[in-house]
Length: 387
Image (cartoon, rainbow, N blue to C red):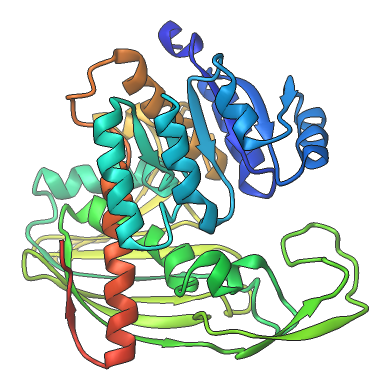
């Protein structure tokens, strides 16, 4: 464990699904969690007691006034990210924000500027990069093992919004943004595809669909993902404009082409990201439901299946893999590895170095992609990404 990391502190904003994941990941990374804040003082206190955190802040402003907090993790609703990230940077805190970084590219561009001026570390939680075999795949592309990248395909599928009675704040454009399935999970795929391939998406052509133009919102306040498991007794109709699913054709800067299918209405798929990269010498395929396996495709000899094992992987993949072969690593481990890179960077103190984690600039570019995808869907044409 890096002793310099152990001297750093953090506080988490958000007590829903992903906030506690950050608390756990921070502890496993060796970072002391000072406190947590929710949407109300009661939620803050309940979460603090449940998670064994010392402080449940009464407000976000109280958290920012706490001089013992070095970094703030934002796991709050999307509409709050811009305001909270900007306030945290101005308060002299390092910031690690859940995606999307903001609601619009204008907001995210401003956050990139503020981060650069602040002299603080600023990252976005694209944690899927930190599955060891994703690093292994990226390394094999970089060293030329698969040859030139020809095309990149895949999908990200879930089923938690399959029924019209499935409801969450994310389905509302004013809460989560005009794009939902693409912005919520599709951006994870887009980030991973670009990270592994080393190529940037430069143009898109999209067709999106709202499967349920009207959803039934529970009057009692229960939501999908609330964990309550209580049958809905009373609902009211709510008009929905955000996307449930969609397909996106892609063009990359080296001339490679690709396609992405994203859906939150695919029965049986709880959280399945699949990515395949075809090169002139080999192909690589990875599936988040079997994250400890990397498929390697050949033309003239049998295909291979690489099982995650630090002794068999390259240096970058071994560095984000802490257990011997045969001991599986999964979702929660990716946050630990991301946070170790983030806080290792903070502890090193050289902010002119290249950050080993997704930055606010990466988060901004994902919002540019989302803007282009939405525009492409509406105008029915290819749209180039405007930097």
